[in-house]
Image (cartoon, rainbow, N blue to C red; front, side):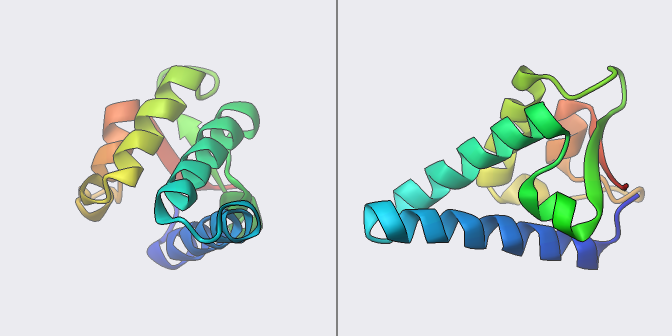
Length: 109
């Protein structure tokens, strides 16, 4: 299971990447930044099993029931991350509500 410092590092890297794109193309529009963040998360987790931040922090998103995280589950997980509250609530295993809902777990690579 991924520890909190690595998770925080990964989310900061992902958010910084979204901010850079938003700054370059959307004049730092906050809605655009959130949308860019969401699209980056969905596509990277679906295609690579990890976001850019996860890869740099040595993490990956694993599915508990499937060989890999599908597009639908990446979308559900990301939508809940964007709501923030599900990320702030986690169980004894360190899984947030977003991971529980998507049937995923964030682990070290």
